[in-house]
Image (cartoon, rainbow over all chains, first blue to last red; front, side, top):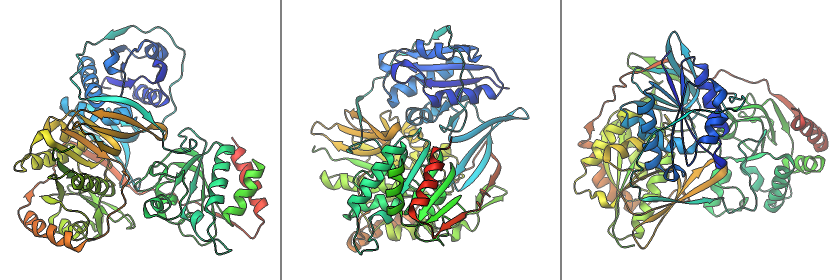
Length: 334
Length: 270
């Protein structure tokens, strides 16, 4: 088996995040010698965190210039680590930071890159990768001749590595930070009263456009819909997803759920989140039930249309009921 | 902000999302069954990039938008009949596959070559736009490699907002984990920006814009350079549709409180 470089960047407090530990587990499972390459302001804590993983070498590019996620500096750091490690397979977590920078680094190395891998395995001495095409509609297994082959593994696909911390011998690779015209100013949350996107939540709650439509009394009850949904999110700690039709309403001047933004959108032009359970409400169509739910294990739906062709066959349970009434009761119980 | 911008948008078409897609294997690798017969639309994220580009160009006098598109000529023409009515742009067409199974490395090479071939392009005013992913391959790597080929190292992905400043710089909001945006300041173009959804709705069709665009689109399609993608070194072992069909239990004609109790118990399960 070819040697493998696991690239990881530090998170807050200098530690490695769960996606990095998942990528480490995937790298170790390939069976070849693993080198860990770390990027961040200070990597000592991160290196010690995975010192007991069995990695044969720890390399680092560190310094204030490499603290913030930024294409120019991250690509330079990754390129330097890859050259120093001289590994043919480079694995990293598909975080926003690496997704931005590693394709450019792969190009500089004369290699190739594949993103959104959901699995990577060594078979008959060669590495094969699994990923989805056409927005999670078909799954392919592929391999490449070119090296180095940089692979970004989607978070949530592998059980993260866990083990005792230790003391790692870190080799620092000197990299002169390239002149960058970009400065990172900080982070901004959407202008909503509270967090609605929780990637680590056990439950994904999907709201469809039905919440804003006229109800049995002939009137829309958007304010009550907001109250019910936010109440449920608070009680269940679920993450909120929205169908495209609901999210698009905000751009069309219709009554909207004020906390629902494009960031919540799932499906074709939204995200395909990974959660153990999903509860869909007032949704109809392929977007939420097929594409958005591809990686949801247990699925239930509340829908007034018992013949909804999208929920049937895709959900485990379809409750034919008024979502307003059910959610009122559910919030009371939770 | 008075310096006019030159905005090049990279984007092609994808099968209409409502179509049923089925993979087939051929001698040159996988493709979609009846691919040329499937109705196509402009890739959604590339569309967002195009609309944001046009909006930016409209606000800064003298700015111009190009759409660089790789796809089968006949299909491109069909898609342009709709897209050209949305916003003003000049098309640069490449005649090649728009398949999701194409390699982003080779796609980037073709697109970068087409951008370099645009006459009068001023790198100091250049913004390269595109979708941060496509709805076909979803590579999320093509724009970065285009940027590298063009020597542009200020790059942003998952962009939802671009705000130009008086000093010629701009503020960028990029999507990051946890439903947040990373805020960055870039001192000046050139830059590469891979757009997520942005904030603009799809523009309404404007026949006048369509007529003006089509005068340039047809000649651009006629002189589209052939751009085959060899997919050298990329081997597909299999491409399959997910088979999973669930046995859905239908629950109806019971009180909302009972349904709520069942759901509450399900949520509480480990």
